[in-house]
Image (cartoon, rainbow, N blue to C red; front, side):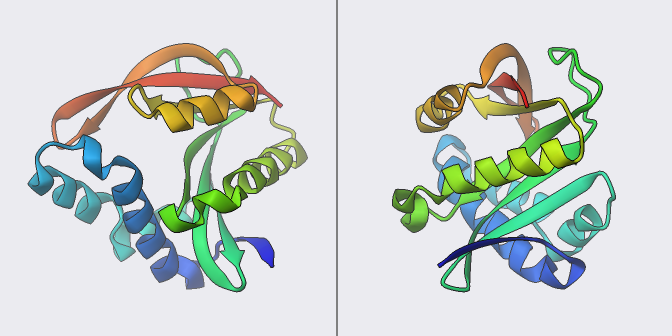
Length: 171
């Protein structure tokens, strides 16, 4: 059974572990220097950083469960500014990750549909995100879901910049 719930402060440890594991699975192979990868994971997905993020009212986290096992999550950032996105009444889908072994279940689609509905309930009109230019699977996923390429941005990992596409969608 699939269920999606808003993450609360009591979910901080689960969320930190999910974030660390899924980011490493989806992006780790793009990072040449594994010390940079480890440093990035430690800086961005520690329990203390995750607790700080979850307590920020601009951030909304959702965890997706398969048979009560947390296997993925999404993070929305409300009213996130990007020069390529015209709307000021938007949200950034900063993260949407599913553990690798659960990707074949197609639950990423369910999670995306869920967060789009949540954004509509909040009366937001646009959702945007960025994707690394070499992440072809993610690019295809967002294009299938009617996100449009509206620009680019550089994503820093310990001083090295990685070129990303900015996608946007009216919701």
